[in-house]
Length: 162
Image (cartoon, rainbow, N blue to C red; front, side, top):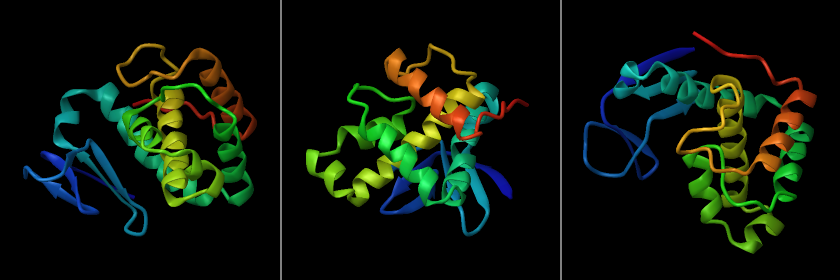
């Protein structure tokens, strides 16, 4: 696994850009086939945030290896949650864009939300220690507790620190 830092990361038309003005500003990106993670250079000055973003990206690698029954179990948990909010902006943006049909038809947009929610939840739970306060932690307590229980039952609650 290779982790590198680059300045001014942006997502533009499915590609990662560095130092430009086009696209949406991001803090990290994972390339599973290349076994590579790229983090924004600004995170070097924010170790706690760097750990949270790195954990999120690492859990993309875990997601593809979980197996369909475990991924489906996470999806079912989310399908039953009606609360607004999320545990990271990547999931929050995708959740806000969902239509009622996305969930019932299991569209690509829904499946991408499910994955991002898994990774954001892992980062909240494992790197941030389940902290209550962060601008991106907007999911209510009951939904947070359900997600924590799911991670515990799935055996995914290893604590990460640097």
